[in-house]
Image (cartoon, rainbow, N blue to C red; front, side, top):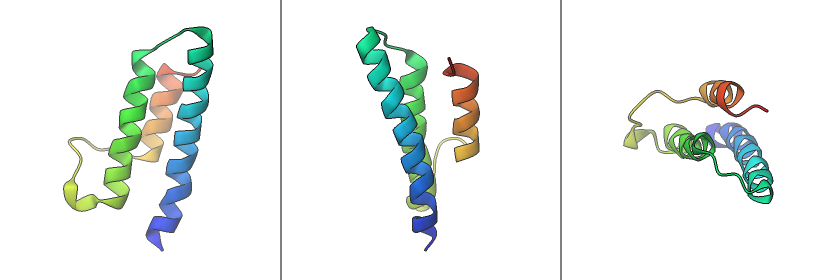
Length: 74
């Protein structure tokens, strides 16, 4: 049940990443912040779906959205 609640959140963040990555590819741009965001999504997946593995730092959907707003919003 918990996984079903978290899956759409991760999917939404991933879709946000993919859309920006595609736009950047078309524009010939490659940004370090976008790659960092991608890895933050992976850490979020671990935090939500494999908690026993632990993450090296606190991560949440709210933190990812804040990262996006501060470093990737155009």
